[in-house]
Length: 437
Ligand SMILES: [Zn+2]
Image (cartoon, rainbow, N blue to C red; front, side, top):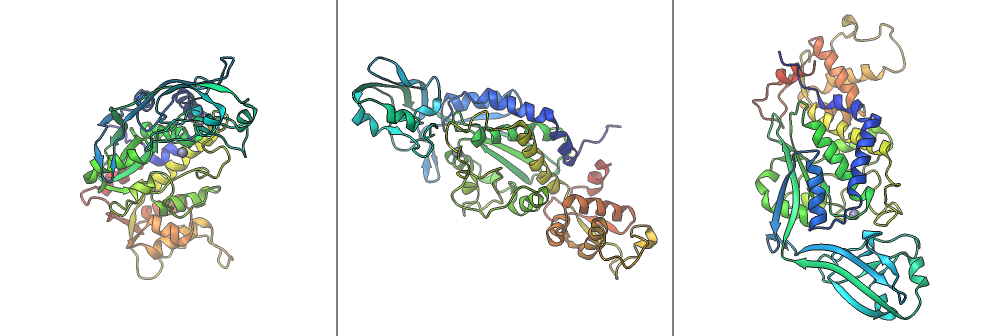
């Protein structure tokens, strides 16, 4: 007999291991030097590197393709860029940091006075050593980003500026992977992959998503999983415009309510309300789609000083935090995968738990233990309409504890599983239960 596949929950302790953190960090290190953008070779080669780890399909959408109110822009590629001073030294050098070019700069090659150059320079006076990350995707422009300290030291005179880039008809690339499950209801995991050398904002999400795609490939899946690696905003808009049918099958994309629940019991995280100024959840949650997609961040964008600067580098991300984020997402997925709705088989008053050895023998204690509380909540709310996640939210008990209590009650014949409303009715619950052992 074939041994049953592992459950998603069994991946959680494995993902916490040191090797996960190291593996994620190595991938980030490999991707870090690449100059990515919303189109171009940097994005494409990033997706090709991911293909070494997961069987990602690459899609190439031609420039000019309409996507709702947007149009796929020209493809941008860059080979070199610099500002040279009068002695011919590269004082700003793309070869040293790809953040130093305004992302999507049009080509330029000229001598220019410092006064004229200033209008094309971007700095962060409040973080004078950091290079800011700036883009100009939809308005043709050129510019350089540099430490404020360097700007202050520039002598008046002439500078040679060169940006060896091309902005021409081409393609927008994105990567997609579907892992089919028992149900065609989908869980969407989407990561933006359009930022150049920035480690936390973009590469940590890319690496964690790739790790999840690989880990989930050989476990038992009730849900189908769709992974998208795409350029922010335009990528998700293009994907949604081409996949309205598939989008309707997405029932969770890190569902906010469930994130909230799992996160609450994981400790350090907190849940914020949706804001229309965030990442691609803005597109997935636009009124025409309104998918249940939340955004999971260790620290939200814009709220750490390294955000969108050269300080979001390889020293800023830590292997243990990366592994922790994997475990956190897996906990959310495990709750969705292993969620279940039960029927109380003894609905007329409470069953006598003590007689079955399920309740402490001593009466009159002030509090019941957590597991006993979990059993009481399950018995009380298992009326075929409340799932274990619903009961977790109502009772404020961890999902894991309720799952353990439910298994005990089930073994004692006090609960029986009913087909969850959200899953296809032809899914055999017993086959799922069988896989749990
Ligand atoms: Zn960003």
